[in-house]
Amino acid sequence: MFPIKDLNRSLTTPHVNRMLILANVVVFVVVLLSQWNMIDPRFAADIEEKFALKPYYIVRGERLYTLFTSMFLHAGLFHLFGNMLYLYIFGDNVEDAFGHFSYLVFYMVCGVAASLTYISLTNPQLYGIPVVGASGAISGVLGAYLILYPKAKILTLIFYGLPIIIPIPAVIFLGIWFLMQWFLGMYDIFFFEGASGVAYWAHVGGFIAGMILALTVGLQRKKAREARYSL
Image 1 (tube, rainbow, N blue to C red):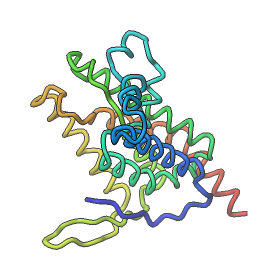
Image 2 (cartoon, helix red, strand yellow):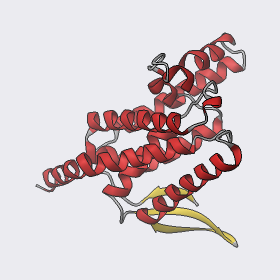
Image 3 (cartoon, rainbow, N blue to C red):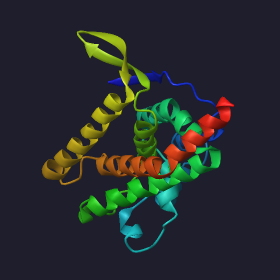
């Protein structure tokens, strides 16, 4: 399943969501230019060394800032595109429900929760491997969307003989997505000892964190904002 867009109009302009997308793209372009020797080629290596998350340091209480900086680094173009597509589709409505500043805090908290989940469940022998990507934080956005807008329709590209686009309720689309992350995470542990190269448990942890925050904070804020805009 490949999401195209959601049929769920936002009541406000998603300034923070757009800013997050822009920040991720800008960082990726700068790193890419460095790798192509268009700017100092040492720059890309320095960024990964200083700002990617390595569990080895986190469990020692060092470089804790990488819990945040690693959210803005990506391993390649497809990695960036997939993450930004999901953030673009689902993030505006979650920002609409939480409010701009609260959404930024929510996003960062989900990203940290995702990273800590990954660290707690990963093989200690892999603690030295850098972890990058916004997918943990974006998983939190997906978890919140599931709680806040379960009936919203997601236009989805599927392959049933021929490719077709159909609307799928968010609760089904995101429910399937979460179960896939869970099962792939279990498969990764049992067959690859966590060395598949994908932080599935960060996705699971971020998603659950997003659901919890939506249940405890997001639903109340959503109702208040909808009441305000209905006046």
